Every structure is written in structure tokens, then in C-alpha cells.
Length: 289
Image (cartoon, rainbow, N blue to C red; front, top):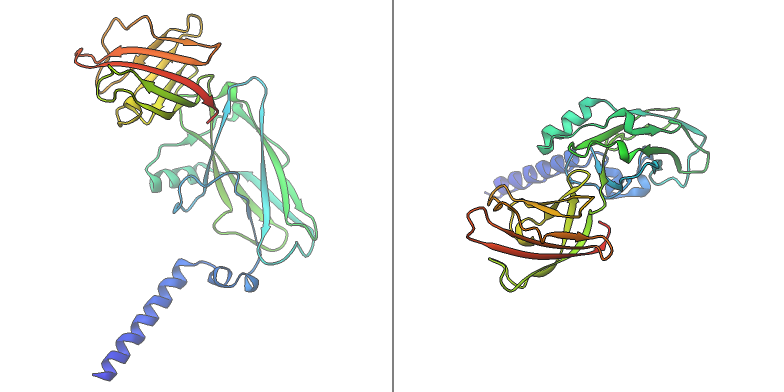
């Protein structure tokens, strides 16, 4: 009986050890960084969008402008060493569509490649100087050329390094870039006492760019439910048109729905398609998202 218990415990330890080794690609780095090996990898450009993916994806949103917006992308000599032992020449290139396809399959997303006319890449032949840990290049995004109806990403890949080890985890990254229209941001959202379902609501919400003149409310309906709601602002008259596919919107829509650019305030009046619910909303711009 004692021998059986000993065997069971031994097997448990072996299985646990094997599992840990398979989970930690460079377990020596994780358990004791001073005994690890430096690797050459992309530095995070923002927070990783979804942890657990085999390919890191970073989200960047910029105002629509005729002037290109610059993002600095850095390659890092990461690990215990204080700097590169010699000059390390690192070659970066545009990644392939296969990395996008892989991410889409893993995360059940539908990203497509960013149109080449909407960005330009700086010098991709980098040098991490001896004693240093970083080298950078620039990506210039032409946000006025973005297709706001599509979810796009720019894949980047470390192709080679003159010495050292290229990371197997951060050698490919995806930059999910999008443009923000004039109404995109964080807003203070309130409802009237007579609003159906959520009267006297008062909370912060996000308005997220759909296209050049439309934003979607997040969270959805009344800043509470998952029902999709979007506002389209006529840039000439500042009139607001509401869309809510799940409930419908009674037409003709209320002409009092307006955006005041001077105070950055939206006042919105609409009814459910059946007329069974009335919504009176006010949104005041607070800050960028």
C-alpha cells in the first residue's frame, strides 16, 4: 500500500513537471531571470488586446486627419543582460496574411490586412548598438485614408538578427489600427425621468467610431443592455439619426435630436419602432477614448 502511494505521488510530480515545462517555453527565464537567455523581440506598443493568443495584437486609434500620425515600434534585446554584447543588426519586414488568418481562427475575429495606401514604414534595417537594448522605427498612418467600415491590422515580423536569438513569441505582432471621427470618445450619459426601462440614468459611456459620421454606444441600449444603438450626425445640420436594429426606431424620427458642437453635447429623442418605449438621452463629451 505504501509502495502504491509512493508510485502515485511520483507519477503526480512527473506529470506536473512535464506540464509546467510545456507551458513555460523558457522556464529558466520565468523561474530565475538571471539564468535566462536574452531574446530579440518586439516591445509592447500598448496593452495586449487579448491574452492567450499565440500572436500579440495591439489596438491603436487615432483622430481622422490629413496629417499622418506616427507610431514608434521598438525591437528589444530582452533578458538578464544589461545590453547587447555587440552591435546586432535586426531586419524587420511586413508580416504575411497567414498571421492574420491564424489570429482570426484562434480568436474568432475577422481582421483583414490594412490597405497599403494608408500607411508607410520607416527604415526596417535596425541596429541594436553594443551595450544598448533597443532600436526603433516609425510607422506613419494616413488616417484620412482608413476604411472605417473594416477591422484592419498591420502585421510586422522580425525576419533575422545578426547574432542572438529571435523570440518565438514576440517575433510577429499585429497592429489593429483605426480612425476616430469627431464624435468618438468618453461621454457623460444621462436619461430623463420619463425614459423607458432606465429613467434617470447617469454614467460614463463610450461612443465608438463606425464611419466618418456615425458612432455606436458602448455599452449598448441605454448604456446598459447589449442591444446595438448608433447615432449618425449630419455634419451640415448637426441633426442626429438613431439606429437600433433589435428594437427598431419609429419614423419619422424626432427632429429635436441634435448635436451642439460648441458645447459638445448631444440631445437625443427617439421611440421604439412599435411606439411602446420612449427614450430621452443627453450626452456630454468628457475626454478622448
